Length: 413
Image (cartoon, rainbow, N blue to C red; front, top):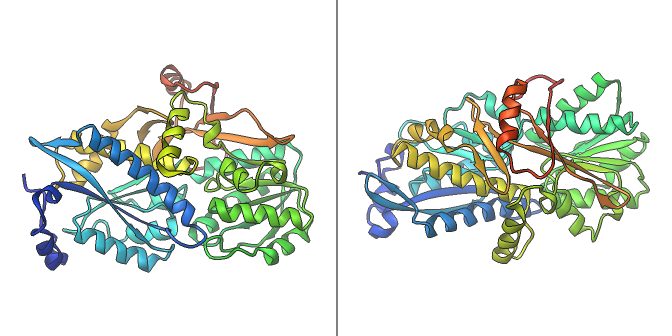
């Protein structure tokens, strides 16, 4: 088996790699490019921790055996500071190490990788979290997306806010492709419900820590609720600053922001009353979640997060696909084998992958009322019929009833 295939655009680098020890030559290199410094560093590090934890487990279990040769995974990570040009340069560096797959979990930079990951003789699988519809609409044949589509999150959040009687919403969401798309999807649906967008003041959650200006402009319109969010650390700052400025209304958190992580940063939920977002990992209603959280904290000295578990699980999908394809040379064959990696019933549950590359994973909603987290609500969003939904119900290990999501917004991929 010829694992180190030539990459014509990186001849010099490949020649250098060919002189490395045999033990390293047998590694399957998994790359990561993401924010590892700056205000969004905690988000990038959480993604890395999930990948690293899975790789250690997979290697301890014997790695994968391809054509009789035992292979192990090796993680190589680079900081891209959420800069598309730097992300592309990082990808080139990782390709020089013969990376089979490269993770990127911020669509602003993920989009840059999708422009180059199908170049002849330089192909690599791109994996990572994003809810962006634009990612799957690229038609990229080597894409694996680890989150539900934004339309699901936006509809669930808007419907929950509407049920509480909130009618006036302001948006102070992160800048960039991801934030722009969130504001467009949410704003369109909110207006369809009959609500009003009182202010649209995006802010850079990846580089700034002072949000006084956009918050002042938004609060001047007296909103009932604010759609906010980006990485958890800076989202916590937005909540704290808004409350200090006298805001008493509700918050809707874009799914990148983790509620339980933010609560820990804010020393409790007192500033988060009437916040609606995705279930924090501490409340994840699956049997395996507590053990994962304990192991994650022991290994990385920090609480687990949804992005950590999403990237952890995805390494198992990748390993199963590699094993099913019985190759590490043909990334198209590996990507085509991904459907054979499902279902995976672990700390979270995944049931398949769409033709465009989006993994079918549950969406769990939660809010904070009277200072406490409410019981999670878990939605199955990809099933088209009651019969398909019933099949999921027969397999699931979730400890709360599942709900069938019905889209009112449009595309789910």
